Amino acid sequence: MKTKLSLAICSVIWTLMLITNCNMETFCKMTNAVCETMNTSWVLIHECRLRAISRNITTLNIDITFLHPAHVIDLRLELKTKAFGYRPSIFNYTIDACTFLRQRKHRVFMMFWRIFKDFSNINHTCPYVGKQIVKDFYYDPANLTLPIPSGDYVVLFTWMLDKKPQFFTNIYFSFYQDIINV
Image 1 (tube, one colour):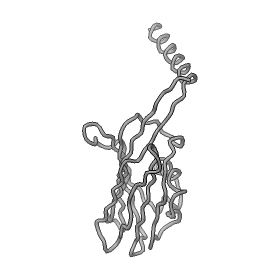
Image 2: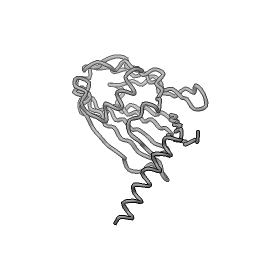
Image 3: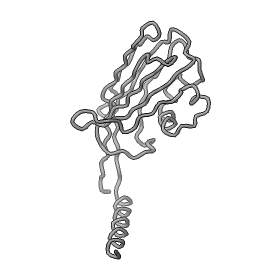
Image 4: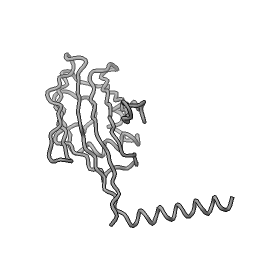
């Protein structure tokens, strides 16, 4: 028992020494964006595309028009990882977006909100009507609050207006961490 405990303590100390002597470089690049409406009488999607800024940086632009006022908006968020096809969800949450925008209490959605809010005009409470824009969204990996392993991922957003799925937004990205000795 003592050897297991001392081995665990030594491994923790070695890991801490390794972390302090290394620089961790993190890359997060969006690789694809897919937006599709299920009901063109409610939602029109004018633009949903990635724009390459450099080899490792892409920005996301989305331009959507709500044709009718949306008073009840539910958002389903799924994160999946790719391993011989996309695996079952790492997490899957559904939230009342109108309540979240009034109170901002859900931890997972708050993480996404902090990353997203500066690039969009979706920053007020319900109802939503007219143009909704995401312009030049770029994700800085330094803002990541949850550790995730390197790999390819997809974030699936399903937007339900008045309790009916109206459109979805799928964002594919690659996330890699490189450890470089200093």
